[in-house]
Image (cartoon, rainbow, N blue to C red; front, side):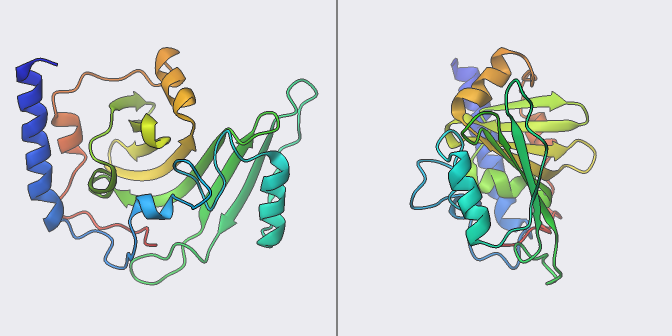
Length: 210
């Protein structure tokens, strides 16, 4: 990376450090996103012990049974036997005003192992993600969303272009995230710092508390 680009990213990071402390986000939060998305038995980001490419179908079913989770699935196909497991949770997280929010969980099992965990119907400030994980490796434009990719953390955050807030995130293997870029599913957009700056608001308040 040349000196000009280094100076640019240094300036962006310094600017974010000035902005983030003043952002009134997650007033009721007690832990950070990395703490929420970690588990003693996981090697990287995971959801309550369920980890992409590690957790198999039987372990997922055991988790659902032990936690009395009512779920639905899409029927497996004869070719791939792929399944999606869906459920909603209403006891975690709570909104900043204490009201229960239903958060959608969808887990994709293409063969025998979990490949992708998608958490939807959330409402997070982009500044919260950057505070906890730093600047994304890449930002892509997908439909009406920005995709903030963190391959080494096995995370992809989806932010609404107009609202500039994260509404869902995926936990998937680093390999799959990088393949998305290789296959151009989420083609990265040129970065001059303005994209990230436009997604940050000092007045942003998280509605996703944990």
